[in-house]
Image (tube, rainbow over all chains, first blue to last red):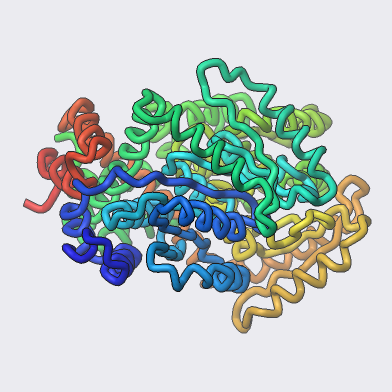
Length: 311
Length: 311
């Protein structure tokens, strides 16, 4: 714990492994370090597969390292057995930072139930934060609801688009456009970049931004480093308007509420099973599956038997 | 209730509206009709936006109507404000079935929390089932985790792909490939169909199917009706191997378990709030947000105060 708080990378790595494993030691860990958190700035990077997220993260690490910051990276991988290869390749590309002791890189796999990944990721962010990493880059591989929940916890969310994706912005998961603070057109030297930019501008024009932050659009070529200075300037702009603002405290409250609710429902479900026994739960499931009892009645009975309903 | 069970479309429409609104009358409704469910065959249709899901659903409706079946359609829409237009267009295209009294078409919007949409959709499926619709087509608009959960409840899941999607099968949400029982390459008269087919075959070849159902691949042009007979034959094959099999009863148990767990956690969370008061919950969230208390400690305290933890 002390070694983690003093910034020791091996202690941090071990702590994140405990989080990934869902260890019973996690609550104690978080309790011990939580007062040292809330100092890091968390930048979320999301977008379709093939948009160049890893390359962009790579050059952002370079940028913040040159500015003298300690940088943490969490790459959130989906669990799909069908996409293991690409992810491994991405990680290898980041190896050049492995020798830099002020950079900490970690993958988190999506192996739990819905909500579990977001929970584990936020715990890992807190641990990195407590270990003194000042900038945390949160990269997601997919564009599903899980990934939206993960990056939605970031202070500034960058959504990467890439020209020639076929359905272009339409093919992005609904919900991902709404959480963007900065749009990045990466691989912007490819044909179609102008059209994509026009599409995004048009979409942004549909909304009345007024007191809201209107997401700027930056064109980059991550592999060549083009546009990175501007991207970092736009992230800094968003950070500057956020500091001390009502918007960012509302945002942090919402994140805290989501974490609380996920933990709460996990604990309550465990307690029901402890009280009525797992075979009673299996019976209820069987009654629903065989159409002997509807799901609402089955639920109400188990809640009553556990003494956890209205008395 | 009686009118719903006798197949009255207006009674069904009203009942589904109650489900969408999360009405307190839903548990009673489900209790009353649940014994009449479990007879419909549910076919899930999912894939990226632009893959032609609505057109395919349209021709499938024609097919099953010609076979004399009563057909229900549930189109699950994401909540995104940015995609309202396309969905409306899709619905209009289905209007030609509006005059057919043996076809019932309904959209369900994603407006609740995670899990809420799947729950509402499964309730709506049960209501249609009880009303005597023999084939239920469950169409999702997006490809996120929510949509995966929705179609994963179907008896046969068709995943639509379309040539020239850029990143092709890579751009599908991880998780969607694993739930497919039938792959459909729609718009297969477009360039790139052969390559896409080869990609899918290669991906399927990576897995050892042995005792599992190996998803067949069907090429269609939904707007012209090509390939639909074959698609329906493959769906019938999958249905035939499923009937009475261990695989389908396991599947239905898993779906029942997911419904039960979602209902259970919803009820338990409500009960905690009832017992400790919503301002106590707000305090806990505030303590987490301001870093005064870590999420695990805050959760444990609220659970203890509610008398819903280990005593």
